[in-house]
Image 1 (cartoon, helix red, strand yellow):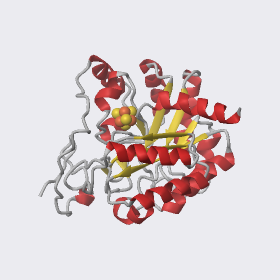
Image 2: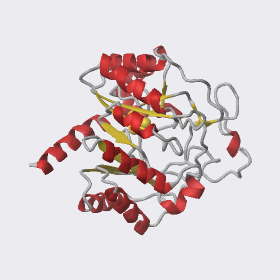
Image 3: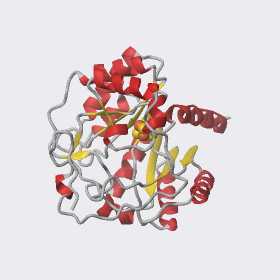
Image 4: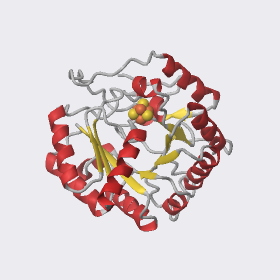
Length: 315
Ligand code: SF4
């Protein structure tokens, strides 16, 4: 039986230790990633470390890190490296997090400036232990970036703030340019994949963002290959459009360790293309659908296209 440890040799996923190992299936030829060996990668890593920050790129074991960090595109993960949830797909450590770091907003802003990011993505662990789920901290990070990097557009990728009244309002009132919240999977897979979350609550959160500020772009994403059916994905698209979500991302689920949910199937590139075509037909302003699509992959370029798409539709 495999037990995965972090650098301090504590089990990284104590809640998954009792689970039987599941086989890690060999990746198909169409999933090939760039090795993280470039000079840009090393420089990005040095800036992240110098500012004492965490990134989801590293914590989630993102396959795109070699490509993104070469271009100094890192996605900051705020409020610590330990999550209060234990989703079956996610490699972020589970446990009881420490207190919030009041200096973190300024350091995220400083790292954004040093990396020269024109578009920055900020995500977080789930903080169910906090009264507001960390919403005020998100808002403080947004304000700090605005103050230090006025030309930089800001995208937040938030938790679901389940049972945290007023949290979504707090984040939206800080005026991020893009509010992203991932559904992660189809409703029938929630119990197995995202047991602490509720599908309807996530849809409602996205809808609420638009109700508060219709100018904010909204974005959501799912992973495929977890055993979902095609018709379920089409239903998710309809639900997101009913909530007026602008941007949909669809990517292949990859299993972080033998203790995580197995990959049920590798979806072929032509199937991803088919989902993209269907999603555009359903009215999304932007769709990114490919095996290696991740929420924050090419987020800066995609934001420019998103704005152009909205402008074109308004004409
Ligand atoms: S796709 Fe996102 S999470 Fe992955 S390396 Fe790029 S910026 Fe980081």
